[in-house]
Image 1 (cartoon, rainbow, N blue to C red):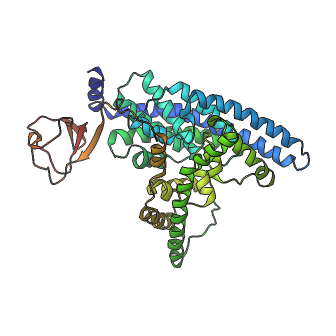
Image 2 (cartoon, rainbow, N blue to C red):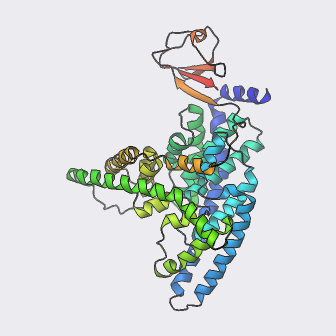
Image 3 (cartoon, rainbow, N blue to C red):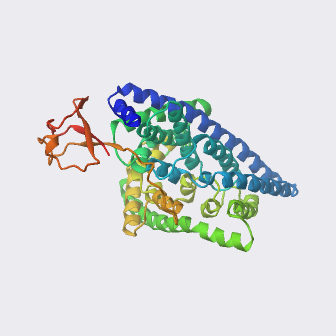
Length: 439
């Protein structure tokens, strides 16, 4: 009862409370993720120097190998104690928002932070976006726990922390907001987007202060716009990328099974599969430090994402994640140029259509299914969900008591001209207004 009272109180509170909470989440997430990015860059530079100097001093390869052995042991200890730090972290965030699992924020947060730095900086082809999103979400959950918020409020903060993670990782606040709506929360509501935007902007401000205002993938200002005659090539490119993205998804979802077989042959425990990736990377790091197939890296189970590896390998983010708007805006913000949005949209749309026709699933939802494969996830954590819906022509003009609603659905308010009005059974629904439902 107390939980429900908190939620109803939140829904009727001023919008400033959402802005304040978003800023608070953005501050904690922004500082944590900026430190994460800085330490990754610092350690990664040392590994690159080690491989470079090893061409003249081959004994450095033995030092690097000893470091990898130490990493394998330490990462194995952390992944054994907290299995939810493995991999991208985005499926775990989605599972938490769906009520399928509940993390202890601090134990998972510090392990993900340290393990992510070790895994990503070790020269494996792993992206930082997944760990950043999970770190942002866990930081937000810590804020929610400290403020003793309700489950509904906690979920909104977790989604906002995920947005802050994208924003601080790539200096892309708008992409962070779209990511929450398109990939994480899956519906649009004013409370969610206001909180998420506040968190994204705040986290991005901190990131810009630490790393400067140069875009993450800054392109030359002299880069010319493509001719209209080039759009036929873009369509063909999109078709090819869609096919590649579909097969990439198949491999990325099945690579862990091959790791399990190899680990069985070598008598390695699952938490020590990273040793296989570290051994494979050494010759590749020696000859070409920046190249390693992301399937080998990600399949090891180490904390790390696939966004940047997908960009590196030339696949399309929108196709593989089935989040085309997020992908398009993310790339535009990363390069700091909107002029190529039309060309980018053409390629993304073509790739998205292809992977959809081939039956490809959104990669993070497919990873979530793999996460619970052979398990029975509990939905007992899912107590109350709140959504906002526009009043359509089918129900406009009716009173609430005339609607045939499930006993688990409650309409709490109707937003008219920006005012949140509490409803009763006799309240008339007006076309174009927004109603708030609690499920």
